[in-house]
Image (cartoon, rainbow, N blue to C red; front, side, top):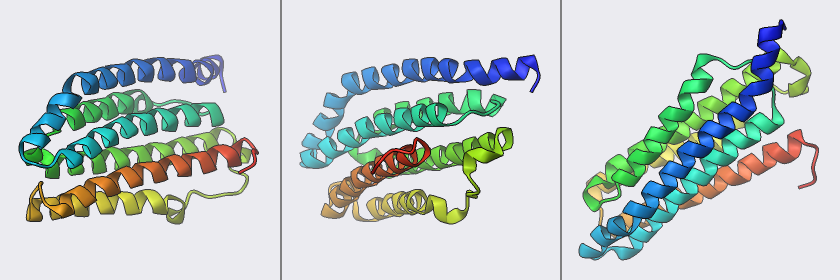
Length: 207
């Protein structure tokens, strides 16, 4: 690498985490302001539990996004592209949309946006590993990023799209809708478990 590339590799983690920290702070502030009104809209239609689960899922989503990027830049080194600078803002905008869509009549779209966030996060993880492997092939220790590596994330994306269709069919106040939002929370927890597995593997930590 030349001097400019080396500088980009060294400064990118701090720049990214600083920007992402601001985005997450704004997202959580918006959730704080709109969360209770969002739950109130669910209470008005007799589905308070679904509203609470939705707010919890939005909160978990912010944690997953932060954990994803923090773990990537702390575990890997890569030469950043313009895409790496733009995608965090796209993900931030989608997180804002999740908060704004906290209403019974918007639940199918809420699932669709959450699925898009998962898909972008999965693509971000893949691109980071490819770029890190290009900079330092030894980082992957001979492990290729195959489709099976992303099976949990793929299942989650497909499941969220299916939930969007299910909710559109059964209605937002149905038991199926509540179960779908609960499943979304479970999917977010699974993502944290997957991130933990990669973290322990790459830093040679115990389970």
